[in-house]
Image (cartoon, rainbow, N blue to C red; front, top):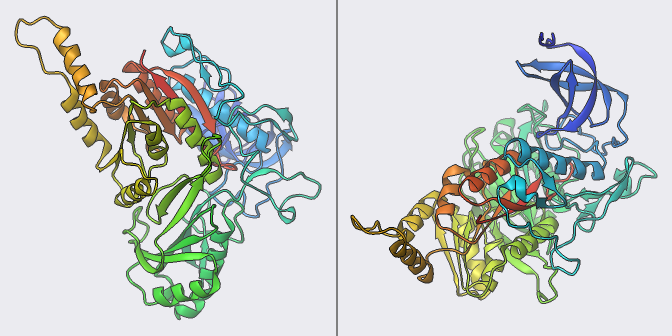
Length: 541
């Protein structure tokens, strides 16, 4: 069969059926997959082809012939130009539905789990184990229930991905179409990273990069950000014209980062600069005078468009905020409080983070005699709630700032059973496996008894974890970490992932080492974008 003759610049009419990682809608032209940006599954659209490869093509939706029932009017004036959001034009119920499908597809296609059943349950036959899968949590469980369906243009659709129906911000009346109901999934981000550039008049603009470009959009508004972040962005732009007199001076501002506490409303502003420009101190003073909820101003250096910057230095005020996550357990009367510094990572959606912490602690099933190992432990997001139930909890984190925050948080929580290592995860695991592995039997000795006693001895010495939590960066933990964790022989492994493909690869690696996936729950941490967080539970086969 001849491959379809598509060339760059062609315009084709395409029926779009599904949503892919990256936010593109997918259709087929004479058998070839076409990924169409700004399309909505269910659309029939005119697509301009922008790239043709051997097995697939990419394009942009230029007009919609027949709109999908899930298509809505995107409220953002920058949508379709800004690279920050990809799916504002899908109703929120459709976003959740397609994120669930995205996870299921990745688990089947990459992870080899062909049959995913129920909300958050994996078919035991396809996962490679024979024990019965755990039943769904009862309604009285402390874990937040799967969210109710929301009603959009596409009708009432049950969402297996946990959405923000019961939490988070909603569009203000002035920013949604007249007559449309308020919808969730807005103003949820506690951290913003604005890029700086100069406009044609030599004045500073702050915004995000255009889709597939390094050009910076002169941002009018962003309805994903906390109000503090947007006020800070506008204040920086307004004052730069005064504190930096020439375009050359203003060009030294490369970006602005904000971090805000949803608990207190107070936030930090970090000025990212090339070198040490003289405007930093007067700009900090101006921000302090204008923003009543400003907790501190920091400064960091970066060379051009480099991916990394220097550690932040305090200019004025405080260098951290306190964020809270409230448990739904009756016995947890006080919220979980975390110190988070400007350089430390914390989940960008605090309302959903609380639900995720609750889920991880429930699925971990930690008892009073257990040892917990939390890899990529950050500021103690999962480590500290788990430590409250455990005999001992050990965290591993390579970020100096996050480790300092985690240790401060453990002290504030009055936890004496927590140890945190500032090391690379692979290095700590290698040493732990080496220390807990049983010695080789002498020549001629029978296998079995000595090894099992040595392994049990390691566990009783407190060196072998009963539960391991893995919350790696977007690239995943990888096969080496999966293999090392499996060698420790924990009872249960909890994996937290923010990318469907790396989730599936990591789960496949764990299954190959004797830890098949038992449960999966997607959580919508990033509404209006294609990104989705997932919690998975694996148990020893």
